[in-house]
Picture 1 (cartoon, rainbow, N blue to C red):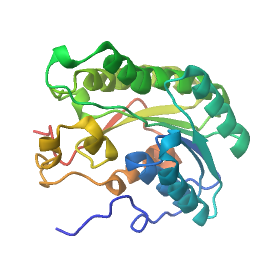
Picture 2: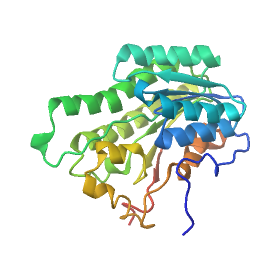
Picture 3: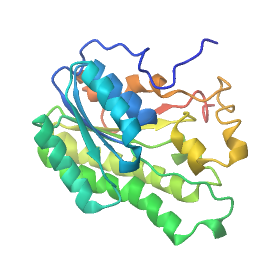
Length: 265
């Protein structure tokens, strides 16, 4: 099987599907968010990325790649578990880009715990605030700026449907993202705005090696897919492009699974 690049800096080639549009992507410094940001820029969009301040070096790489495509790149360092920052982040993105057409709520927190007794209130609180509360705060702040034809995309996971025992808090939030987005899609369609979910299977991102999986699981991560390997972010970026573009004009309230066959009968 041919090797697949890690992020998509070299393999994704756009054709102008998002020309002139303005996108905000949370967690745009690495993994799936990074690949989507690069793909959006190559499709002609200006892109603002949010990231934790300690991830500045990774974010700077992405910002340079966006600018290399001749697009405006906006850096938004901050902690999305803070409601005030979420609202400020959206306002800054709109001001810097002169509007907002695409909102990708992608940043997430994941940690593995072998037993329910090990999931502390602090664990649960951080996961809920990062994955669910922030989604609500960001969407609530952004929607007044979104014009008809805009698109909201959230990132859930196959574990919303096939929960992993070691990810009690994480799987709860991913199921919540699906339900929230489907309900939001019904509200927004009246405004001409679409909302959809991408549900990745095993994709290789920093979440896995930074506590999202036990060390022994990291070594064989993705082996359960029909490909025998995890997906790479570049392989899912085109789905975000589809949902962000007018080619997806009849897609609303849907969940796009990209799982490598995991959980598929």
